[in-house]
Each structure stands twice: as structure tokens, then as C-alpha cells.
Amino acid sequence: MSCILINVNVVRIIKDSYVTTMLGAETISFCKLLGELPFSILFFFVYSKLSNIMNTEKLCRYTMSIFLLSLSFLPFLFFQYNSYVTFSKDTVNHIANLYPYLKWIVLTFSNWPYVLYFVIGEIWPIIAYSVLFWQFMNKFNNPKESARHYISYNLYGQTSLLLSGGIVNFFISNSTYLTKLVNLFLNPVNDSDQKVKILSILVLILGIIAIILHYFCNYSIEIEIIPIIILIQKISLKISLKISLA
Image 1 (spheres, rainbow, N blue to C red):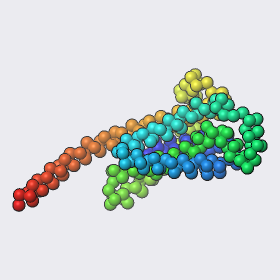
Image 2 (image 1 turned 45 degrees about the vertical axis):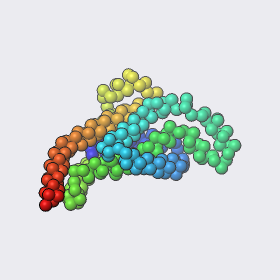
Image 3 (image 1 turned 180 degrees about the vertical axis):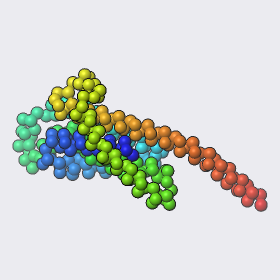
Image 4 (image 1 turned 90 degrees about the vertical axis):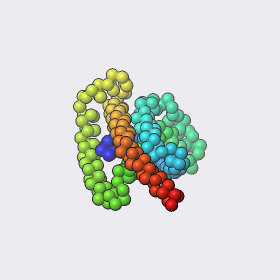
């Protein structure tokens, strides 16, 4: 839970401090209406269909992997080279002047890499925390125990919010090994680009830790539960045989 919450907060920091600045505050409403809303509907439609085909453990890990790869590699692939994958400002202004009623839509989606990150960054906290995490926790607790334990889980998890600010400040302010690796291999163009890449690597690391812990927790649960299920099946089989013979 701590890894997920810190991960979500780091993504929110990148989204609110850097991506929103690059998009402009006046385009946020269009991103939410034309980007976030359709993407949310599409995601939950696809997720509901896949949940009927795959088990929840694999679906959870695949979903987390796709979102983490998107949030981690968008800054590396498109933020630095945004001018190569989008139209120039003159072209965008020309299109906006040709279609004045669509001006803000054109201006918004002309920076589609930032729009894509904004949309994914808005939906990620809902998916990671509200859907995947609590779906996973329901395997540990039955309905009777949930009322007693879930409050303590929330209180414990929220302490990571206090840690996330200090962790982000540490990696941004200090010359850590992560900073040296970014400067050596990723060639940041400016200070903002360097910070975004450092935080994106941090998002990926925290996500990988969360996926590994999710796998081993599920594995340990299966080891404990499967023998019990087999025993219940044997008992029910004996009872059914006795009833049929009687």
C-alpha cells in the first residue's frame, strides 16, 4: 500500500507541476472532458470484459504494468522530443484560425504527449488504489473482518503521504546515484527535464516493487488456501457418497 500511494503521489507531482504547466491551465477542462472521460469509460469497459476471461491476479499485474510503462516512458520518449512528434506552433495557430470554434480543442491536443500523460495520471490513482489495491485486500479479509481492519489499513497507508514529499525532495535536491545515472545516460536538456526523468524512474521502481509484492502475497495465499479447498472437496465428496448410498 505504501509503494502504491507514494507512486501515485509522485505521478501527481509530475502531472501538477510540470505537465499542467506545459499544457496551460486553460486547457485542463478540455483534457478532462475530451480525454479523461472517454478513456475512463473505455478502460472500465475493457477491464470488465477481461475480468471474465482472466483471473484477477494476472489482470491486476498486467494492468499495473501497462500503466507504469506508460507513465515511466512517456517522459523519456516524447517529452524531450515533443517538437518531433507534434505540429509546430505556426501550424497549430493556422489550424486554430481556420476553425475558430475548435480553437481550444486544437490547442489542447496539439500537445498530445502531455495530454496523454495528464489523462493517465488522473486515472491511475483511481485504478491503483480504489480498484486494484482494495480488490487485492478483499482476499485477506472476509466481510466481518473488513470493518475492523480496513480503518487501520487506511491509517497505516496514509503515513506514506508524509514520506512521499521527503522522498521526492531527497532525490531532486541531492546528487544521488539516480541523478548521476540520468545525467550520464539520458542527457536531460534542462533542470526540469532532469527532475521529471528522475521522478519517472522512481515511479517505475516503486511500481515494480508493488508488483513483486503483489505476486508473492498471492502466491503465499494460494499455498495456504489450496490445501483447505482440497480438504473441503474431499469432505463434501464423502458426504455426497454417504447420502447416495443411504
